[in-house]
Image (cartoon, rainbow, N blue to C red; front, side, top):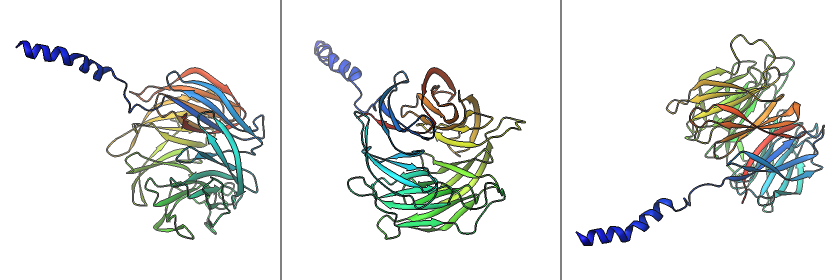
Length: 381
């Protein structure tokens, strides 16, 4: 019996250390927040702020000026490069090197986006191609990426010829609004506000023309709804689509390039009759809640709970964005805070997320920055 007691006594410090030692798998709590803007006001380009996930605090790091209307940004998978649209009538796409530790951004080069008013840019994980959606011309372009992060001229441009929706003012022709790869990167999906379609293209990175129509080349939504942005669930079984003109969120089952709509849920409060425009949507890191922003006379973030079996949504909360026209928002990777970019009031607000209920509440933290319209997080290495 004495031997057993002695062994326990000797091992006790080891057990205590094992229980209290730092968790090496714990993710970072400090991030860089990249802010894309329109430069028609006080902003001159892309700003970088350090974000502290322990308390939701933001601190200025750097800015790169002389970048015209970088209204949408994307980061390479290794966080070394940034790609930004230059949303102008003769659109361009710019590439930058990025140093996460300091937040420094350096211009590399730019190329034509092969269309007018590009509003979305994405890049594949292997850093082979960049995909651009040109809103006004309704085109999607593929630009190869070089080893140094620079862009080459477009190798493919696609356009939905002759198609249009029922709204004569806004759907006179195609208006590509997003070009996003499926989680396995076998397909590129692009939302077309002008034709009420989500187009599906097979993606083969090594081909001379890497995109071709999938076996089911598109899915249509309600006429006049105006598809805008789409996001996949973490389990890859569902996709969520926000419509700008209809102010709805659509839920799809997703399987190998095929979408099947199963639910439509409104962004609007009962009996609301004012002007609205759905904007962005994002899932919480744990996939339990979906958030969507609505603009014009609403200016709010809507919270939905996600059924983990079916993917369907249930309304939870309606939270004011604290400003005008919440064009975009971002959820920090720890899931504790949401950052909201209010384009028309030149403000960014930090909201706290209740991880149990998904509900949002103001923290009192805010930034003043000209025309913020895109937010992206990167680990501060």
